[in-house]
Image (cartoon, rainbow, N blue to C red; front, top):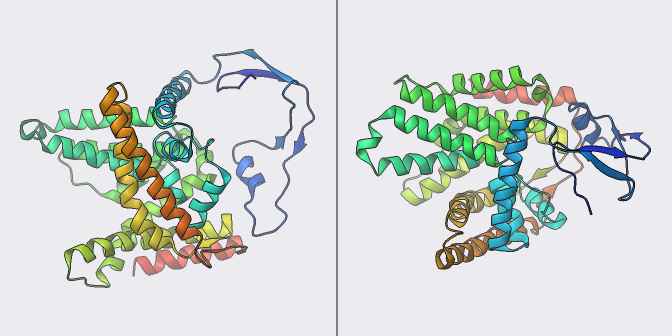
Length: 358
C-alpha cells in the first residue's frame, strides 16, 4: 500500500464535496478551521483509485524537517514498540499524533491535558531549562554569553526542525530566540515585547495564522500567564515550601486556563473540571518524560544503556497515561455541549483583560 508524503503529487479519481457544517452550535466548527487553511472540499478516495506521479515537490526546508522527524519516530518505535507509550512520546517529542488511539485522545481531552500532546511552548521551555542548566555546570563557558546564546538557539531550532516545524513550536522558538538574543546583548527583557515580536514575525510570514486555533490559544495562554499568574499566586500566601511549589503550579494552570477559556468554550464547547488535578500531577511528570525521551534517542545506539533508559521511559509514560485516564473517568470530569456566541466570547475575553490590568 502506498503512503503519500509531503511533496508528493497525486492523481486520483473521485468526487469532491463541500465540507459539512457541524450539526450543533456547540460542536467544533471543522469547516471554518479548514477554510482558514484554504481547504473547502473533501473527498473519500478508494485505495486503488489514486497513485503518486511525482515526488520531491513542496518546500525543501519543510521536506527536510519532516525527514528528520521520520528518523526520530523510527528510533522511538524501535526502542519503545508500537503501543500507547510510543504514541504519547511521539506526540510529545515530535508532534506526531497519528498513532494516538481515540481512547487516549479522549482521555487527555477530558482530563484537560491536551496541551501535553501538542509540542508547544511547554516542551521548548523544558528543553531551554535543560540547556541553561547544562551551561551552569561550566562557569567558564557560562560567562561567554554569545557562545551560550548560539548553542541554545541552534538547539532550539534543531528541535523545531525535528518536530516538523509545527506552528506551535515555531511560536515558542521565535519568542525564546528574542529572549536569548536579548540576554546576550545585555538588554532588559520585556516578555510582552518578545510575545508581540514573535506574533508580528509569524503573521508577517503567514497572516492566516491569526485565524488558527493553536495560534490563538498559545498566545492567549502566554499572555494570561504574564498578566494573571502573579496576582493569582499572591492572592494566597503558603508558608511551607513544598506546598508553595504546588500552589505555584496551580496558579500557573489557573492563569493559562482562564485566559484561554473564551476560546475553548467557543471552539470546543467543553470544559474539563479537574484540569487542576491533572496539571499538578502531569505537567511535572511530562517534563521528566521529555528528558527521558531525549535520553532514549541519544543512547539508543548504546545497547545496555539504551535498553535501560527506554524501559524507564515506557513506565513513566504508562504512569502518566494512567493518571490521565483515572482523572478523565471521575464523575463529571467534562462539561460538554456548551454554546457561546462569538460576541459573548469576545466580551468574556475583554472582561478577563480588563480585570487583569486593574
